[in-house]
Length: 273
Ligand SMILES: NC(=O)c1ccc[n+]([C@@H]2O[C@H](COP(=O)([O-])OP(=O)(O)OC[C@H]3O[C@@H](n4cnc5c(N)ncnc54)[C@H](OP(=O)(O)O)[C@@H]3O)[C@@H](O)[C@H]2O)c1
Figure (spheres, rainbow, N blue to C red):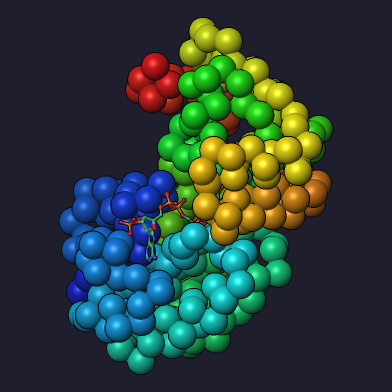
């Protein structure tokens, strides 16, 4: 039986994945509660969790800032158990691609005893247009501590569609979906796709990890955030994720969107103008 919706709580509901999930759910007539600090829902203030969970049957769980940070799994476990205790029937977790802390978060969420779906994601294509890589694209130079390791960038539109299916339809309970794009690209190849789509000169410049870290601090990025970004480049781009996976096909019965299509649609939207 489909979960009879009271409300669906979408954590990170104003973010890259959550915003799209909110839109798609509302288009289907689902009653949505947008979980962000203005709800309020704050991962760092557990007193806000109770009210956010009031009369909620399903939750999209997107952690902030990143599942890889220390303490993420404890928070996710505590939240999932509280949700189960409040009568939530189904949890859908946005996860990483195998970082130990992300895997601990998955186990904590599964242990809460609700129906569950894990949505493991490679790097978001939208990091180039809605996050920290946008500035580099606009400047025409994406300078990163990434070398020749390709990444099967996943389109956030695909993540949202999979999450909405898992939140609203039966058949996704107990599934771990590995979501990637259909092919892995090196960062210089991704830059070339963006250059082709925009008609502008956009280049990738590899920089050593230490210089990249120092550059972030000089640019005023808070030390904690700089450490997290550096850690993610070291940890995630280690070659383990190069092989595209079939999660989008398993969840939706269709192929994932290609990076080239993402680049064309994003260029047409004016996001890189
Ligand atoms: N980017 C990638 O390539 C990638 C790949 C795999 C997995 N992930 C995972 O994706 C998650 C991030 O999701 P996203 O990219 O969709 O989000 P996002 O675009 O970074 O947006 C962050 C969301 O979290 C909310 N938020 C910020 N601080 C918060 C807090 N203290 N408590 C509660 N909510 C807070 C923000 O709203 P307010 O500011 O209004 O509170 C916003 O809705 C992370 O867990 C990361 O590990 C990312």
